[in-house]
Image 1 (tube, rainbow, N blue to C red):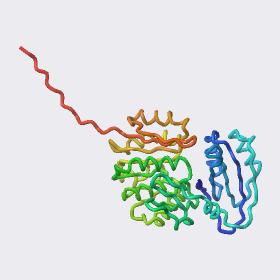
Image 2 (tube, rainbow, N blue to C red; image 1 turned 45 degrees about the horizontal axis):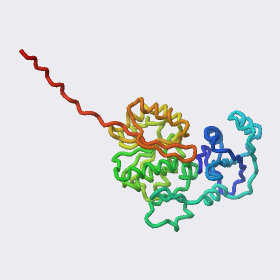
Image 3 (cartoon, helix red, strand yellow; image 1 turned 45 degrees about the vertical axis):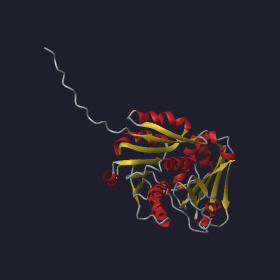
Image 4 (cartoon, rainbow, N blue to C red; image 1 turned 180 degrees about the vertical axis):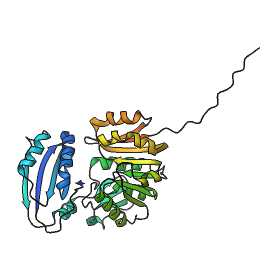
Length: 315
């Protein structure tokens, strides 16, 4: 799984420094916090599943050498000071492109997520999603993305008219909805790099006319407000922002509409569900992969007003 990096990709052949650490899956919250801390200065951030999901390896590539003391301090603040890690200078090669080229294609139901290096090996009958992550999150390898794709396919027979992918990253979920249903999708993210990569991936998949990438902090962009309310909102972000934005989601979701939420650990499920149940949403399904959860919620349909019958008094 590739993560986004805020500083932009280094040019091919630029010398890079690689930070590497391998952690057990039970450290899921610390892994997320580590990636969030490394993200602003990293050229690329990748996570690889090890030991059938029991362990994760995190690789961060930097154009300038990070301070070892700063890395050690960061790990200590996350309770990871006893975990082995390494920092190495890499040879002058395009390591970002090479890392992506080694990523295997991913089959999730009828979806086939692949890079450009698998373009000639698409299985018959699959919906191909070609994703080159660049510097944005979401190549489809992570369990949260897998869970979202499974829940999207679960809704295959009930296509939405107004879907929103909030926190779109590379746009993989927006692309999946556009390809599955042939509907126009709003793809919003607060990271301009994600908006750029989503636009490029839409063009790569010949979905430019159906995908509208835009920058938005949550639901605040005027274009998001104009496009709503939505009958399907997909948000693969993190538990805390999901909880904080629950009232906004409820306001922007049509009665009878559905929401797919992920980016949360199984242990965070109850808190995320409680925030949305308090607003009237109900859980229809959930998918678990490793320590991660994806939720399918639904907003009740508005009840028709029933006139009160007049009480007739007998004489």
